[in-house]
Amino acid sequence: MRQVPPTLRRGRLDSRGRAAPLRMCVGCRARTAKSDLLRLVVIEGVIVPDPRGRLPGRGAHVHPDLGCLELAERRRAFPRAFRLAGPLDGEALRARLATQAARQQDGTPVSDV
Image (cartoon, rainbow, N blue to C red; front, side):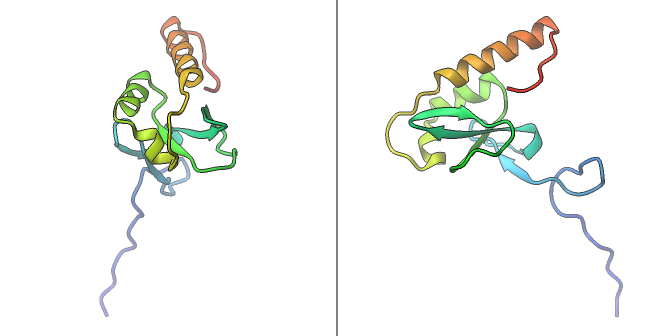
């Protein structure tokens, strides 16, 4: 019988050598490690960031970048990703990502989104 070496699962390896789970950004539609993306959920019609990944409900993932957020809004990806009809308010999310981007340019450390 032929010996076949074990294959790694798809995905980026984490610090312990295990494969990290992959998620797709709803903006740019790139498959990336879950740890590199920001999870979003909808609470009462408002898109809320979930950096710890603990809020209930269907989640969508996006890069923590205004470019990916704008692309997702332009493509109307959020209602499809959340499986909800109607407009969703993303202004609070946009403001948080804008302040995070400004802090990164100033050199101020950013803890969470």
